[in-house]
Length: 82
Length: 424
Image 1 (cartoon, rainbow over the protein chains, first blue to last red):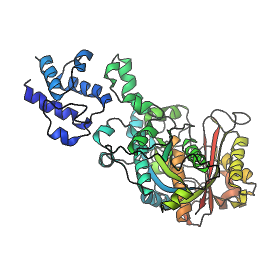
Image 2 (image 1 turned 45 degrees about the horizontal axis):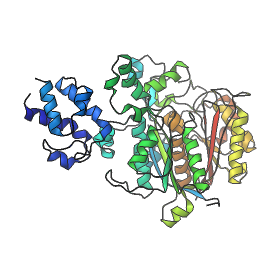
Image 3 (image 1 turned 135 degrees about the vertical axis):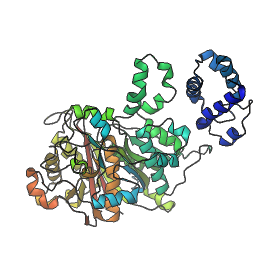
Image 4 (image 1 turned 90 degrees about the horizontal axis):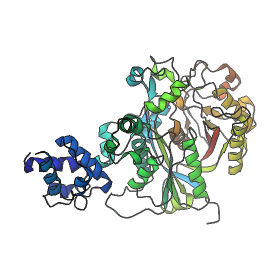
């Protein structure tokens, strides 16, 4: 799994949850999932489940807690798929 | 405050098995269009009753109303409630706020009831995941879709409501009870505007319990449009329905001050129980309670029974229908051939349970506002106990200038609700 492919998939998964569609279009590794994309914090658990399904990985709670930006998500996913 | 406010209806929204939106629904009522269809999944699951009323809400319609994010957390009862509420809101001349807009409408609340609630959410994925040890994979949206207040809570967020936002639940009386509760809140000066009504999803998990009780009609699976037969001698039980009906109740003062259109005035209402005594039980009404409910509504409005010129009955298509008609006659204290004109809406839409009162209050107010009484379908073979009432049971749609219509709903638990709508 390269980081570009992971990044595109992460953006696609988060898309339906993002209230700020404009921020999603210009998203970078530094984009914050909650503050910048307007994702409801309660929905983070649904996004984590969607990552698990898409990448066939298990993300424990400690790992999930480290995900704040899109880059954080990509890094954790890439590490778990190695 | 302190003085009794007059209460009027300034908006309505309806998602019914036979129509979505006021004009479509009115056409359906006037022409006797059925919303009852064969349901293959009920046949596959070996239900006795394999027909039901499900609104024709496509994915395209859902996406025209709601974002992807919202739809991820909305089951069928929430979708029906929310579409009807948004339609009602716009019909009342109000603009739907954006999700990023922080302004709250502190003057408007909502009482939107449901009979059973998010059984589809529970049955489709919460229970299977819990039972297989996958609690973690339930995700974040199960609570908001299964809490009893799911239908009012979603609407409150969509419309930024700042008044009381709650869900009532009293089985098949629910929707009518909500309208009466909202009427009281405005009449007593506690609220300026209230969305009120009921919603019910179309889950087979809800319908299964009624099928097991053998109270659903099971003899017309090959003729869905003929299956729901209130007032008929050949009915074999009620047909399950679903959807939502929401009305905007508003103080007359508020409505006039903002130049809102007015459909009708709510002049009285009452809610009670029969105590499950006498002939009443968990599943059957005590006639004394029903009659007291109707007479108390009349007293609340300060009118005589003879002033009522139309009744939209509860009339589900069970053997209780003749008993209901006799209760109306006794409560209004008139001879059988002098009872108001009576009709039954459920022949077209089935029994939408917690949504029934909401959808049928919309049907009632449309008739008062637009001057007609819709025909009751599928009762060409009137029940023999109703022979003395024949001329008063409306079977073909008639143009009629309704002055005061009484709408009643009755439910399991021996609960009753009766509301009076007057032409404005």
